[in-house]
Image (cartoon, rainbow, N blue to C red):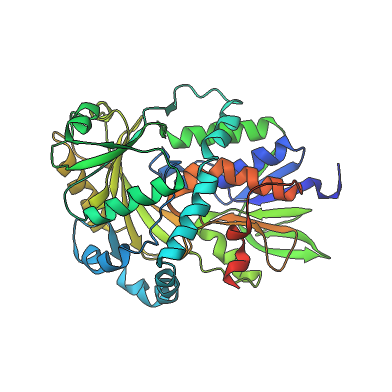
Amino acid sequence: MNKSSNIGIIGAGIQGISNALFLQKKGFNVTIFDRDEPGSHAASYGNAGHFSPYASLSLNRTDVLADVPAMLLSSTGPLALKWNYVPKMIPWFMKFIFNTTKNKMMHTAKNMHQILDLALPAYDELFDEIDLEGLVENKGILYIWNEKDLKSRELEIKVRDELGVQQQLVNKKEIHDLEPNIKPFYHGGVYYPYARHARNPKKILLKFFELFLKKGGKFEKQDVKQIEFNDEFPTIQTDSQKFDFDKIIIACGAFSKKLTDKLGERIPLDTERGYHIHFKNCDHLLSRPVIFSNRGFGITPMEQGLRVVGTVEFGGLDNPLSKSRIKNLINNAKYMLDDLPEHEDEWLGFRPTLPDFLPVMGPSKNHKNVFYCFGHHHLGWTLGPISGKIVSGMIAKENTNLNLDPYSSLRFS
């Protein structure tokens, strides 16, 4: 093995574990650090479970800004703010506004499309090595909307057409045929037949983690305090120990900023707080994930029942869960489906989001042996394996025909 054979990864979510598995394929020794057990109640556990290779259009859109005030004022809307966090968010919002021009929107969409196009094949490479036991369903994903904001829907369809995304527009009858239990409030929709969903994201993550251990990977359940350097080689410092590596990857989602700040790199990472609840024993009501675009929420049939996910709340990592956001999910679910029981499992998780809605993947600005893999906002679950494949390729100094510059942290310096 060459000098760069020992890699440390900070973060045991879908990004960290995917990086580890692709590095192992290339012959590296890998140790993963996390303060929690893999599959604990973080974003890789609580997400919507969508494999969404079509989702190249993000929130930095020309049409979104005008709608923000109305969204914030609506109790059924997809957006909320914790007012005590507003002063901290102002610099992020200013950068976000700067990224909503048509050119910036298309820059993000093109560069998301480049990696989303490769997302499912990268998953399949990992799925080939585990027993999936019916944990992934290939029934497509359905988006529906009412007759409001149709200009926004037209924009989404047009941009995806330009990028060459396969999409199937569906009318009221076709929506009813796909999902007869949804109340008929909808006007139209779009169906992505090749999209998939997870019946239980946590179980899939744990199968990947078991594969990592089986291949000789090590796991340290420790909280990483900082990264030090011996010459140019990184040392991971936890509460009680030091670990030397040839290279390390920071892949701890919304918590990555605490480490990148200490490395002297000002990456404007913040968090979109996302929520979920379950309606137990109701997963027979839907055949596939359904997203109601106007209200920005979706329902996925899972082993745990119907998982209702959605809403974006800006409020940082420390604020408590908002009961009003939970209520929002309950009301939205009942707007879509009849006969739902009491909800269970109120969950809050953190989506790591940058103001241009592109992830950060690649070497640190200041330290050539530190790599980043975070900031995948709503698409962390979809993009885990392809991101791991890309970053492991960088570490192995492989050639690529992808343009990786747009994901570099240098764009913020």
